[in-house]
Image 1 (cartoon, rainbow, N blue to C red):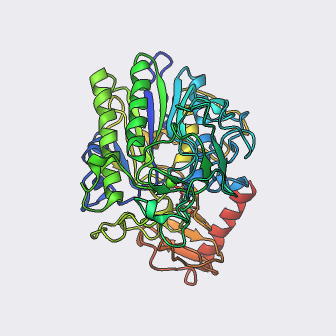
Image 2 (image 1 turned 135 degrees about the vertical axis):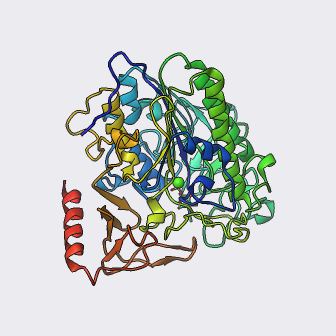
Image 3 (image 1 turned 90 degrees about the vertical axis):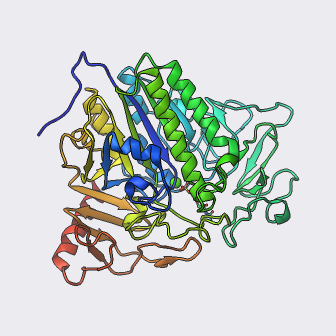
Amino acid sequence: MLVFALAANAQKPNVIYIYADDLGYGDLSCYGAEKIKTPNLDRLAASGIRFTDAHCTSATCTPSRYALMIGQYPWRKQGTGVLPGDAALIIPTDKLTLPKLFKTAGYKTAIVGKWHLGLGEAVAKDWNGAVKPGPNEVGFDYSFIFPATADRVPTVFLENHKVVALDANDPIAVDYVKKVGDEPTGKEHPELLKLQSSPGQGHNQTIVNGIGRIGYMSGGKMARWVDEEVSTTFLATAQHFIEENKSRPFFLYFSLTEPHVPRMPATRFKGKSGLGLRGDAILQLDWTVGEITKQLAALGIEKNTLIIFTSDNGPVLDDGYQDEAVTRLNGHTPAGKLRGGKYSAFEGGTRVPFILSWKSQVKPQVSKALVSQMDLLASFAALLGQKVAAGEAPDSENLIDALTGKSQKGRSVLVQQGGALSVVKDGWKYISPSNGPAFMKLVAIESGSLESPQLYNLNEDIAEQHNLAVKYPEKVKELSTILQQIKEK
Ligand code: NG6
Ligand code: CA
């Protein structure tokens, strides 16, 4: 087996991990989308490797990000589901993390963008002081984040430990149980909204920038973001970090908010895609990636910068707001040929775009290797000659050869987390039996839940149309046993 590692005296690559939020397997033109054009990402893909079987660990955000950070299946730990905006930090501060690995290897590390892994020691916390522990305590030298999701309060940025532009005379209070302050909510005053929430999906508590949010906040009026500026704020901050660190190796976790709800891109993108605000947000995302690659070229560091672009879970259309994602879809297929989407145990939940470009080392190609974002920790450790101590990153596999296109061999086994857990091996996928509705009405996505086992042959049936469980009971037994063994590990 080859194991690609940098020579001791070789120049270390800069690494930029760009994480889209809820972008589907079929949302980019390089992955087959015909109703939307993403030229910057297409160029990135053409310059490197486009993976066709790459996965986030889970069909929602928090667990996927948890696994990326510490190289462990998130379902091994309680409390790794979608977090409210006031949750405490769920990443242990004494564990090896992806940014710590880079730090030990001599990198300057930063996160810019969505965090969604909790902040502070407890739910109750003072947003007006130093909010910690958080990203800086788990390995990032610099952080510029929003705490949870764009649809959750507090709708503010934090730079390192502090809320940006906070006025001491207007302190912030946050509550997810009861209303704080006396501002009108989306529920009480829908006429104040510029984007209506979807019936039955909440998103109707505190109103910020004409949009009802999940959760209540008061104060911090100066500090509240304007949705149309969020993405460009992250871009400018990311570019500043790149500029400042152009002469040494850096690791940037650039965590975008597109196309998660509320989709409210900069005004110049509104109406541009013809697919409603979701499509417009994807155009903004593509433009953002283009701005980064342009900057790298201008600084003369594009050849030795390794860029990974991927997504934290599959796509959803109506995720809480009436933003025309459904009504103006125009035949676009966000999950491509895959069944299901966000929240789902079907492939649409966790199989996501994954592009890796590293011009000085990696030849353009398409790779079918089965890879997980959780594997980046062990893989970068191998590349950089770093040790992973026993007990750290237990589920992360060293796939550096597959990731750099030296081999097409990825993982032999992968567990996927939709609602139910699935296991994939040699192109066979077993979805464990689970209760719960097969169709999630509010978001109009098939959950993949069924009370009996499901078995699909992904090599012949990527759309998971033919449940072969009854036909191949031996296969079901083999895979359910493997899943059980991994769970008990
Ligand atoms: C769901 C929200 C959805 C979105 C999601 C998290 C409701 C009804 N829906 O609970 O709008 O915020 O959580 O998305 O509240 S994620 O990409 O961060 O996982
Ligand atoms: Ca997400």
